[in-house]
Structure formats: C-alpha cells, structure tokens
Image (cartoon, rainbow, N blue to C red; front, side, top):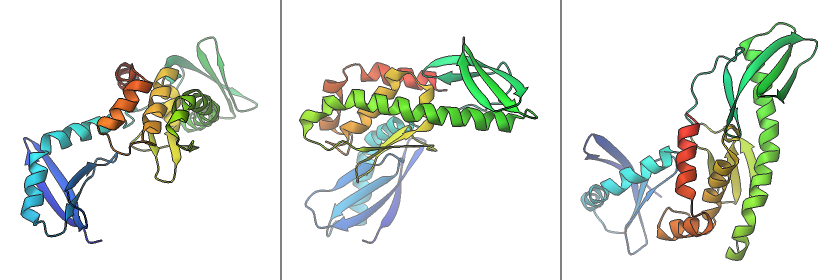
Length: 237
C-alpha cells in the first residue's frame, strides 16, 4: 500500500497526515493514539480533494489529538532524595532513606522507607523504588482488570491479556491482537483513575475508534468517566 503525505494549517497548528487509496466508497479520516492522522480515500480521489477534506475536519482532528494527549505521562523531574514526595495509588508519601546492610522498600506511616545497601545514591534509590512500583503494579492492575471486566462480559468479547511496562507517551493501549498494556507509572494514580484507564481501553474491544458508539459504551459502563479523567490529569503532573 503506497502512502502519500500532506499538511494543512488550522490557526497556529499544522496537521500533518498520510493517505492512501483503497477500494472503498467513502473517505475515512482517523486520528490514532500516537496522534498521527491517516486518511483512506476511495480509488480515483485526487490529492487536492483529500487535502480539502482534511482541512474541513481540522477542528475535529485537533480535538482528537488533544484528547489523546491526556494519556501522555507528565512526570516532573525527581531527585530521589530524603523528604521528596512520591505518589502511590493517588496519595503522596515522603522518602525516608537510610544506608543499611540490605536493600528494601517499605510503605510505613506515610513514608516510603528505603534502605540502601552500602553507599546511598539517587540512582540506587530510583532503582529500588521503580522495582517496588513494578511489583505493586502487577498485582494492583490485575485486581482492577478483574473488577472492571464483568461489565464487558455481556458484549461477547474476549478478555485481553494484561501486559505491564513503561510507556513513553500513554497510560494504556489495546492492541489489535487483544493485549491490554498499562503503563507501570499508572500505579501512582488512584484506583478510580486506574479503573478509568482500563475501562477506556476495554471499550475499544467493541469500537476501535473514538466515535459515538465508543462514547455511548463508556458512558453506560462508567457514567462518571469525565470526572475520573480530570482527576487523572490533575493528579499526575
């Protein structure tokens, strides 16, 4: 499939897009989670017409791109020193760091008590805390998926396989092969926000694009999703 490329302007924004010609009757404009814009045009439609149609839908495209940006992790720089606060399930805990005979991380009385074997460095502290987060994410995300999944059973879809890893730009994604991937850093958000991200991705089992059908399903399953989304945006900054 041969791809061509184009660009249109909308105010101060530039919309770059790729397009191809396929055997179909209507022209489709899709904004993907990575914010790329792909157009599928019927055979015979000229490039100028594709350009015109993209320009006509520019406002909608910008809206969709802004929507996807909400899932981009916005993590401030951390120094991993004593007294610094770090999030876990939506709550902030201060670091209490000490040099001991073994490495360990414990959550006690409002503190992350981190013991570092030997000389204390920010890299060691980060490595230990990241490992602790990863272990917690594995269990907590599974609990959330098990909690959210029953609402989708009636849709006659197959439960996706859960995968947890660090993502650069998204909190979660659902692959075409049925793998639900969650960003390890999402463990810093509240349970309600984690459930929102999972529910959002599971809705893609029925509708791959963010159209009326998708939002109707999301609204029915999680009526307060907008509040959860806003909380996620305000918390993980």
